[in-house]
Amino acid sequence: MEQLHHITESLKRLKLPGMMHNLELRVREARENNLGYFEFFSLLVQDEIVNRDGNNLEKRLRAAGFGDEMTFEGFDYRFNEAALPSSLVRDLATCCFAEQKQNLLIAGPPGIGKTHIVKAIGHEMCRRGHDVLFKKTSELLASLTALSTRSDRLLKRCLGVDVLILDDFALRKMDQRESEVFYAIADERLGKHTTMITSNRPPQDWYGAFPDQVIGGAILDRLVSGAVKVVVTTGKSYRKERGLSTQNILDNETDIEE
Image (tube, rainbow, N blue to C red; front, side, top):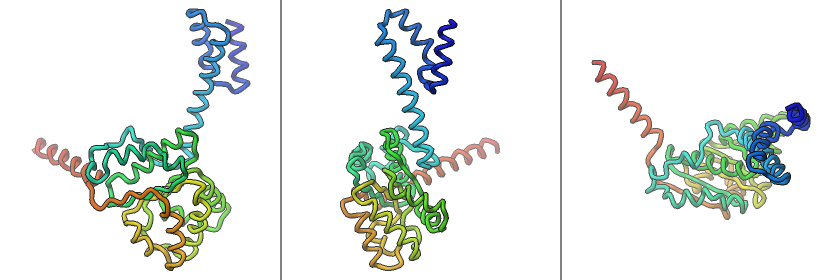
């Protein structure tokens, strides 16, 4: 036991928590199953890899800034089958377009699941070891044009992150400074990294979000050309359905009390 304690302390000093926490278990397994030295050590090494992969995933998810995390495990493929066929969503879930550094544009009415899909793709890309950044478009532009050291760091991250997710694009018109910064992002990322965009408006209506047509055309050319496009015209709203369900529950409780 003294030797085991000594090894545990050494693993702690070496910052190998995966090995340290599983050492007693692996020693017991080795004795019970007559494992060879290499088998025993291989299991400990795998424990450390699993631990580090888990920690790295947690760091990437925190850095992504998803807020409420959404995954494909929690996606209701049947809810909007007519508007967003499950085959289409499952194809997006493979992340093939992102691995090939293509952009993704999802446009459609509020509440149909656009944000859930891009967050779930972002979550999957984090699992695969990629860096992701999720931002509401208006909030991102406001931060980037604040002219501070923090905005400089944020711009650098937007330019180089593997996957940049811009939610609620074209909700309002950009000013000249915002459009110039946005052009720099779109131009630098083209062909190098993936940008995903959700919007309540179809791409042909995005020109109105820019102060002039020239810069708007240049930006959209970089965002839209070669991108995977999902444009939905109608669909059920998750939020409205949940709201109706909640109201029905409240109404039923009121009837019972009366």
